[in-house]
Length: 409
Image (cartoon, rainbow, N blue to C red; front, side, top):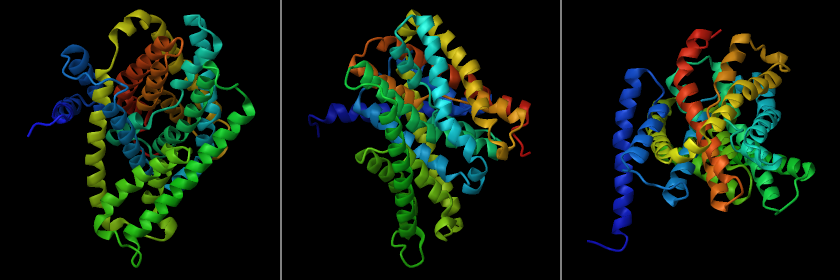
């Protein structure tokens, strides 16, 4: 039966089929080449989009935004679920510094590079820097699932990618409001907004996580015992959506809810009997999300924009990778004496800082608003995504082995 919705339905089904089929092919090639699959998904997306024109899903489309949001939420939740609170306690100061002052350092260094290399106003340069300042959980967590990394380092970098999202997003929207004349850029309100958003996300995520874990596992209250994996998805999406509704960090809420599911002992519960089922379900769910996110991101690469601003964007990203990131790691980790970071651990954290979904979404918002210099911001964001995923993510295993990060100290 053909209806008015039939062409749209066919378009969406074909899109998902293309992504999943070529995603599986890319995954096999990645395994053969011993590379993280996200890198091959990006390349396959560029081939299907810019090369063969089989995928033409715009960055502002509802389908694309849905994939980016749901995919990031589920991957971030799974990242939290695989982190030990006991291990997190040992590096709490490093994570705190990476998540706030570290983001500010990255914005300052990258913004200065953009200002001088592109010759644009400071406010727009800092806006561009803030878009790519936060690390991306949807990129980092999948890479760490495929590469064996020292637990202390893995949990620090994964946690940073969850917590610094709030900082990067808040500063981006504050700068965006300033450049569009909606509000003045003031330190006091900006600091309060960060505290409210971050703390609210943590409290909400803990509450949602505890509530649904009790309903899924508790011997007496566990009315959802037969639906544990579904309850886990509800926890992830519910924490994010509630966070968005009450204007706190939905991504932080999702990550914290994942921490609760991964550490049920905090409410005196045990998920060991269901662990194999949960891991199998999560692995399949997150690999599908990775395919959808990164094949679509690759298909949207604007090669004309890269040709126009390519050299300047490349210079910015190189400074971003080799100046801003090392300064951020050193300023955040060295003061934390309790963590006892080694030189090799610090070097590894300097190299691992993928950019992906969140910056792409922020860049899309700026383009959609028609902000001045939006084309430059889009070019820098695209270059940061390609360089950090195709270069850094692809060499993570090699760097980890060379630095001894593939074994516990």
